[in-house]
Image (cartoon, rainbow, N blue to C red):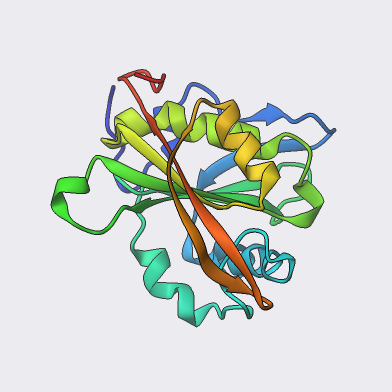
Length: 198
């Protein structure tokens, strides 16, 4: 499969990334640009108060996410955003691939993270993004995909397990959210060259 240059969108990895979601939203995907970072951060921050998704206890700033943004690139660790084709400039969500543990021997392993705008949740977009990430992973040099999910985040656990992720680890009571100790579940999936489970 051809590799994308840094200027090409990640669409090269997948046959089609425009689709009609389970709602009536018309959506399209692309690589994130620096101009998208405020919207990416706003979507992330919208999850903080729920204590379901992130271990951040307070909203983060755009400036604090610059290094994280620049750690991504379309060749190996992309950051994708979902545009609402019917409302230009409106982001409905994003997906990122991130290095696991930052050591060279783990270069074929990546963590995938999905964050959706409140308006886009529960409409099948997370399922579409996860499917797209698994299909694209082999062309990105990734054969092991991980998800780090709180043990009380039933919706995300169901989503990943629905795609064949297995529980590879559990860190009991490692996060304290509003005085409540929470588990972190590590889900993993090995892929073949087509993005299917191996």
